Image 1 (cartoon, rainbow, N blue to C red):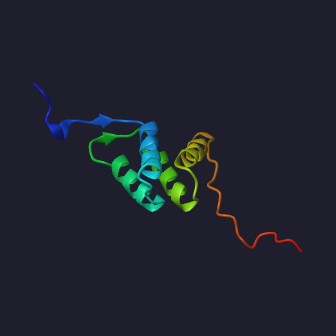
Image 2: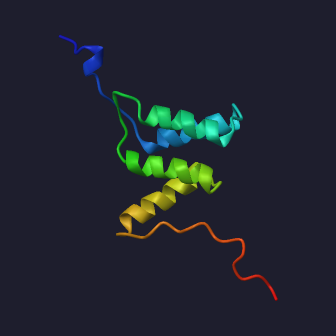
Image 3: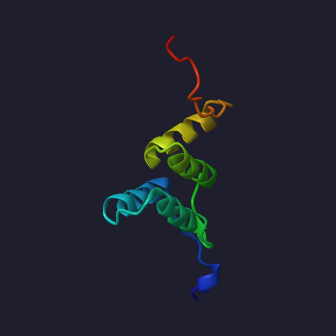
Length: 100
């Protein structure tokens, strides 16, 4: 007997999501805010198990807010999580240390 479609649970990993982000950027040339919106929709899709979802969500926000590549944002999120409490850096101030 096969399970009902509602009972199915699909599993993927962050590399699949990273590839999805890359394709949306490079092939479809979507703006970063659209890429983030679509990637979040996939990552949080009902019936999809994405281990490390919290890191993916954090990375997707840094991807747009810090204007960095998704894979770099993910690596920073992963390191923060596994380094035992590294804090999120604040955005540098543009008025910091100006030459006199």
